[in-house]
Length: 417
Image (cartoon, rainbow, N blue to C red; front, side, top):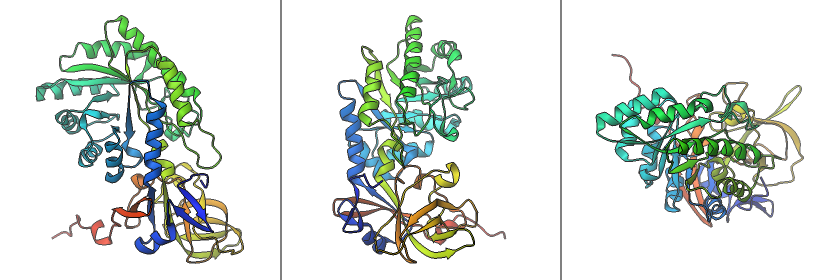
């Protein structure tokens, strides 16, 4: 949003740090993801400062934005990483991340992924089912290793967010039922190639209240105490991520308020605290830059057809999510209410409904708060190359992902003989 100090208007031109977004479009084309290094680093520093005094590890949720440059920035600042695939592990390692600071979540880890993570020496496997416990014990035995594990426990706490990103309710595919966790921990303790390291929960994404975090944490602590009475000592408690950001008019807790709440429930505990922020670190650090191709007057609505589409930014089509859309250069053109849509051949290809914009054909617009789940969820639908990504640091502008070209999209395909 425009209250983000890293994206501000200066004399009717929208800047990222000290660079006009129009200059980036001129140099690198559109659609283009643009990130502020200052915003990324500032978010991480806020988490570190807020958790000071509490032994902790910040494990960035790689799925939010997995660009190597962003992973490298967080790795150099001391971050750990929360991954959900073997591919994400390879990204973390390629970016200079430490495998010993990686936790591996996800309900469907394959044998190959388990073997890969064991070989790399990750910090912990967040196990999500009894079947996974059994498989991991077998894989570790075959490798002659002992796997560090925590159970991802489903605390059945309503995160009060979109149902597609709620992960801690009874009907969720994620985690093990709270009532079954103690018995599963006892089974894990008896498996010779597993070592119990922690306890994990994650209730959802884009949470805008502190109360669900506290409620989930309290249930996790009660289970940790029950485990201690059974003689099972934990090294860490992983309380997940999910802290929301402001896209429109949301009022999520600040990082400091969120951290204070977690430190309160952890007071006097011996276990190390792990948190897994993703969106809160990168969401408002990026925008999607796009150009208006056509303005089209319809019988009932007016359309602004831009060169970005649902394949570039899936969130509006998938969640009916809101992203503010701003003119990159304010020109004094009369404002009109537009449906902002892309060129993909789907009625669901929209980026914003009923937006008041002062734009002309050829103008640039910026889709704000696009740093999380933008590029990482993009696709090549309609044989559209994925966008370039650019990182801005003060006045420095650096491409951190080249724009794809069409030939890349079918380079691995073969005609029959």
